[in-house]
Length: 396
Image 1 (cartoon, helix red, strand yellow):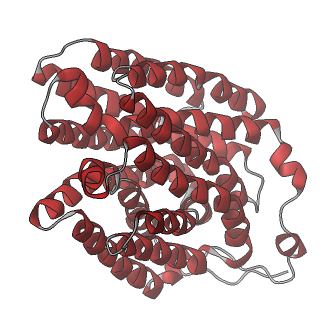
Image 2 (cartoon, rainbow, N blue to C red):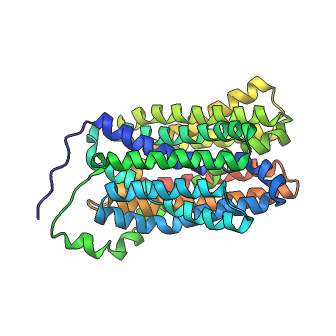
């Protein structure tokens, strides 16, 4: 059994390449929700139906993500990641050209399949190629780049939709994503992890017992619950804030962007914290409990504009602060040689949570329960602590 030599590439370059790729994943996850009011008027559909469109996207991403992890471990991220980015970007571009609503659902499924490769591929490369003492910071930059993708999406698509329309906004952003996929393919040597000749375990796939590990199952549950809460916030804040705080859509979109930007800074701070302590569960508990309290305040207390912005930014910062510790917990539970498989399985919980949140919150909005999503998110954040502590007990 021999290893093919890896390219001699520094940590900064590896982290930058993976971060840029992750940016596109999160950007395309959030291009549709800011356009929902325009799509609703243009297509004559309800928020519930538009929520189902996002549910299809995340269902496909979650279903394919476990298999994507196995494929990454077997064939390598350098082949899988550029292909996934191209499929995701091309599907979004085609949404802008789709002649009927049902085709949007087909394209959402294809986009979700493309999105499924990112986490197993990204974490496979980072875990194998980055210096271990910088691992949490590498994970934090990965999270930050994704969060910046979320932050950039609302402003970008709303700007393009005002210049042209919502269809052009999707077509233009999708085309730019395809260019990014081409550049990643050209630079694919930075994504090479390891090629082991004669590795029969890799060819036969992961052991079924891997998916029955209590720590990995608890990590999956943790990711699912966390995703319900955070995807609900980031996707629906622009729609919810005008209803519960009486602000304009433009102001609400700005608040959402500031929330996501603060989330990114919180992730950077959390990376430094997670590299300097093993108490990742305590960082998670403190951050998420504070986020739950702030979420209730935003949803149920009339706040002046400045206070609303401050609360949203603090919510984002504290939520982001927990993310590197989350990833370090999963890393501790991943057996050697199965990083892509484990991260693919566990991160499919994020997609399941993101699948659940849009139709549930869309249903609440269609029935006038404008404050209920904030209560739901706060309760789920509290429930998230139990599986996080369980993972820590198993591998702490």
